[in-house]
Image 1: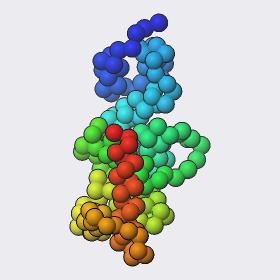
Image 2: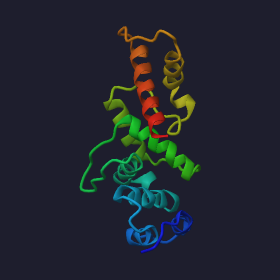
Image 3: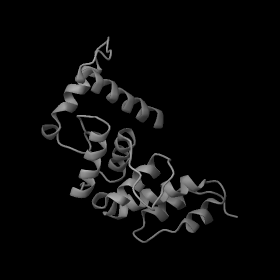
Image 4: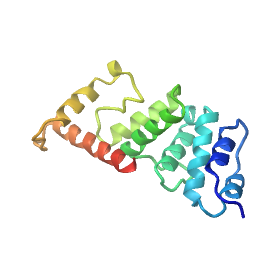
Length: 170
């Protein structure tokens, strides 16, 4: 059994070829869980493929893996806005120059709208295409933010919940 070597695993994942879970297991022994192995493989896919940016099935699996959720490749499960937001931040760290394709953009927009949100993550859209985000962020900074029924207050509360989730992941 080999001792875990994060340097060796990092080098393996930075290569351009396909990486098998068994290769990671060989280097790590039993020190990594299945979800940790999947997360490492997901980061390799982000680094070496455009699939997560053009195929919404792949994007959804990436979102779930980066959020340490179970990944079900048999169909569409959907994703919560906080999971998408966090995944986009993680993707940007791995591949700052990524570009979201039309299909994935529709997927992201759909699940944000389905949750009743009128804003999108900044990593996803330009500020001029996402004017509500700055309004919601500004409202979320108010000292006495309460849900008094107005849409901006409700959106600010949703935004703060997303930020709290992301904070818990870091």
